[in-house]
Image 1 (cartoon, one colour):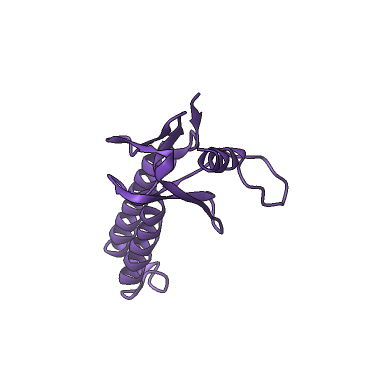
Image 2 (tube, rainbow, N blue to C red):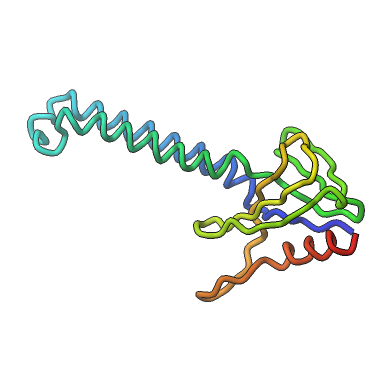
Length: 157
């Protein structure tokens, strides 16, 4: 029995979205820089002031830091009959169910994430963050069924 605890969207949220957003930010900052130092500067004098460039760069860095803060800890987790297979897509480890202590929801911002905490230090630390499979709801916050199955597996192990 194998059950995917993490969503199929995990690699997209971990790698594709940060890379695309980073490229978009670099392109946007570069375009503003070029516009700022070209002949267009005279027509956009009020909009692209000298003070706007550092503010735009600071905002870009803050947005990228927030995206990476959410994306970097994401892991792929599969529940097996003996434990959890945890992967960051470069390295995979196995954690017995007896070493899993708590499954918590980190829930105020999309994507909805969950943290799995361990009793021991693993190759990924004392906890991992996953995006559970999406569950369609209309306005209400419903916890993912796979997290409930994981909790039951931990309880009955």
